[in-house]
Length: 71
Image 1 (cartoon, rainbow, N blue to C red):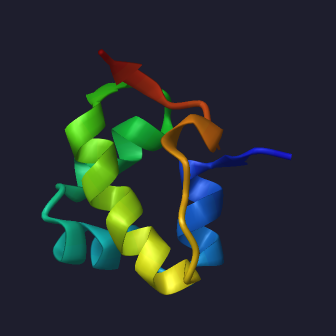
Image 2: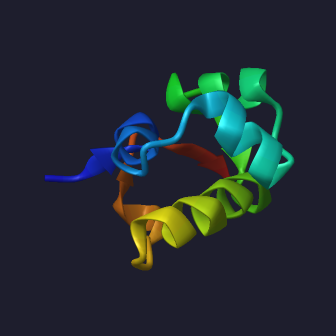
């Protein structure tokens, strides 16, 4: 089963505010991305780098369900 961004944040044991502080991505932006709003690959990579640290594994962007990444 593919995980959503929100699933990964929960699994990492992070609050969105903590992820925002560590990634430099605004909380409102993280919420919008989690709700399927369009975002850039660069922004998602910033989030995924932090999540990977907490989850101790690599995360393929294409494996995250519900992302709407502009090319």
